[in-house]
Image (cartoon, rainbow, N blue to C red; front, side, top):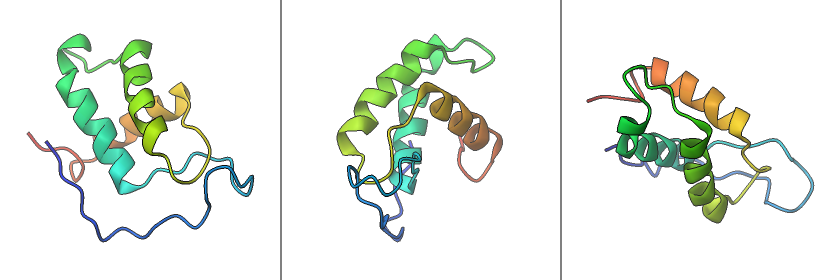
Length: 93
């Protein structure tokens, strides 16, 4: 499991203000995504190819704690997973 480094700066755009509808990923969001997918890795098969259901599951979790930016779409989850899964700084076994 990954842990959160609390030294991240907060987002200046508050959810619902209409200022920024682009999804915002902070470190807590990335940690939640990675930890959820690690817990459900058996559902992804040997190639870590997660299906829509796994991203919908983590979407429900992150929707409850999003404090800034727009909603994260399934495309955003897939893109973020692709990025963090290729970066050895994000995932260690």
